[in-house]
Length: 432
Ligand SMILES: NC(=O)C1=CN([C@@H]2O[C@H](COP(=O)(O)OP(=O)(O)OC[C@H]3O[C@@H](n4cnc5c(N)ncnc54)[C@H](O)[C@@H]3O)[C@@H](O)[C@H]2O)C=CC1
Ligand SMILES: O=C(O)CCC(=O)C(=O)O
Image (cartoon, rainbow, N blue to C red):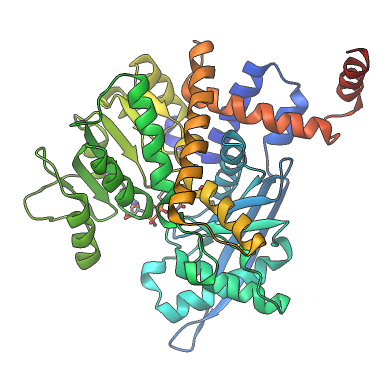
């Protein structure tokens, strides 16, 4: 695949193949993981405010459920494609496995521009999507959550719609909800908090002091704006941030709280008082210690990777770095904390939300953050240790190795890999 024809689905397959090879696993493991187990495409009729009906196309893709019920967000974006949703579903499987959650991976998407929909139209589309994919969903089947351009309000409508279908409140079928309808404390900040924790651990491992470390953030939404604040609280200096409309740069530092307030008033970080304009591409090669891609896929490529100056990249976004860029960054000794690890904070607290919904008993923010901290630190150490032990692999392959080892063990004991391997293992147990 050439870099001019980037396809996230093919990229995900390459990432899996590299780890399966390193682990010396059977080709059946790759055959099972290289594509989703189930896909649904739906056409959703939505009545627009002017009385016309518009039909939106949506997807729910379920990749692999060896470790448990399927889990993953729903994206509303004009450029959603089936291949993108496939890749995102695959990345969810490995994300859940690398941090040890009892889930498989799924993802949803709707081709739409939510910025052009009224609130009523957005609500009708959200409810229509749930109606269309409802046969796949369930507290023990598949549990959606937010992703790009969906939020807690959208999750509340979706949970409500599913509850109407079931004729009882099924809070646990969707996570990332507002707290008043079963959302978890800490979920709103969780993706960012998880990313901050692994960046902090990486900085510690590389002996880079966070005090005064410079940070650039691409994407200033749920993940990016909160990471900027959390790293600022760790003593870092935010020098640049961009969103889809433009960017703000100030070498002396930007106040992330004021910047977020400015964006919520004006719709963009662009034009923030005292800052210079910067483009999304310029930000990626800026002189900084820590780079946080927190927008979309395929941003760090063979073209710009040679010019990346950051020593640590914390991938809050899914799939921001291409395989070719990975090779260049490894050569240039940039430590990439891969998406499946660096963006796992959100799904980890989604898991806590699902557990709390099932118990009907809710934890404080402190309890949630403490549990998240433990999981992220333990997972970072496990991946970093694999990376250090296997000098020939990068952090991404190390993370996939940790994840795929767990998934393939589950597939093996479930009998998905055939009887021969199982018989060998049972003989070993009997002889032990
Ligand atoms: N929300 C969540 O719980 C999780 C999100 N993620 C990932 O984090 C990334 C961001 O997601 P959210 O913050 O939730 O979405 P969001 O919708 O809250 O924010 C997305 C941000 O990216 C910006 N953006 C879009 N295109 C851009 C471009 N070409 N250049 C620069 N900025 C651009 C938007 O303006 C917005 O500021 C995505 O890759 C998502 O899959 C990962 C794990 C969990
Ligand atoms: O919170 C979740 O269940 C999933 C979030 C998500 O879609 C992601 O991590 O990419």
